[in-house]
Image (cartoon, rainbow, N blue to C red; front, side, top):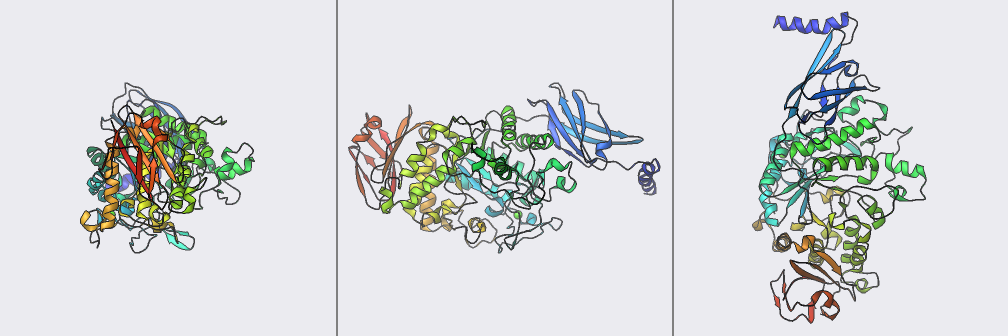
Length: 628
Ligand code: CA
């Protein structure tokens, strides 16, 4: 003991006697890398007292230190490495010297494994979106930690953490399989070691996950990196894909890097606090003033989520490498990007290209909450002559969400038969698909964690509920559904969005109700669950609903007919948006009906031997599999 104290004392004193400050390396990001990546370059962020004052060497076969970059803050160095294809897995010693001082950090290069990763999601999939804190609690021992900035747990408080985690979600994989889901998207799982923040007068936890404090750790309260890796493995074993929710625009204000900024330009700085206007129009407007664009893009999302400056090359490298590290390390299949339109778009293109270069099948779909097709097209591969061309393969289809909800809200009212009313909303939106390179890569939805819940928007009407879900699961695109929709969870964001993020009943030990089981659900809830399950299961087994062409007919009198068709079959979907049963003559649809003599109602099993007219109940979408 005495000897070790003496050594410690000497190690502290000697540099001081030599007139030098003690130096150290306390973090290296990425925390590890792999041999055999397509891109041989990686830039290491090195942090520690005086880390930027060291002369670095790496002596490892196949690893070349090309350049050591120093920045404003002497506690950072950025090392540019090139890893030869011949390099072997192992521990790379990063050695830094300054005068008589030498520090070393062991940094691991792993072999790539063959487990599935970056499989992508396609129109063959059905995505389920859940908030891990609100879905299921499989490990009450990780609900809270006294050494975290927010040590609270309170299920009675809608703004606090509730204790849900990845182990709980893993236990519900069979439930999702039974429902017909093929992919799971969690709101972000990375560490949010943020304190409670005052939002509109109430203290709120970062339970939703959108305030990262360390991109290399999954939050301990969700189970940490090990639980996430395990979740992905269990999901893959069950045939479920996993979508990771990424955030590039901002980080939590207690992110470890922000405690000791590498340089001022790591963040978008303003003379006085400047919030984004949340207005997206100036980004695409050819007549826009630059200041309007700048405030939209560089203004902060909220005061406690500082805005990252992605035009800073070190920030860009940091975020891109973290994306690749996440896919390689955890094995996720697709990438959902938060607040996509607020990011620097050339940076987004670079990031998308880097992910696609390593994982050619990965799907990337960002959140651009716009209300018109032109703006939505800007953020995905499109056919419009914009001065900037996005390379994003997909995107969340906010415009179609709005159109479906508008059509459903008007269903059963006089507006449903109006010139622009009822199903015309859906029809007219899909008619603008010409702007996209591939609209089937858009992710479609009826609500999400930021919106009023679907069932409440449509007036708690089970007929409308089924009609909207039928559209979602039979029109073009990659359908996604927000957790709880299948058990009729409802609510408006009144008074706050916490109301649409309630706990899934049965996800916690001791819950009075368990809606994960048929016995725990009411008859009406089982009707909803069974409806989703039946249609999702049919969809899964019928490629025509994934890749088949879409042909839609001009709606008339509130009646809307479309077909999905290909060499494997034809499915006809006929919707009656009015409040009265309708008899629909089909002569107008002969372009698609020709050659077919019978049909089977996919949901009821009923056989139709005569297709000359169709009987459509009020507020109903009928799904017919055509036969010869
Ligand atoms: Ca827990």
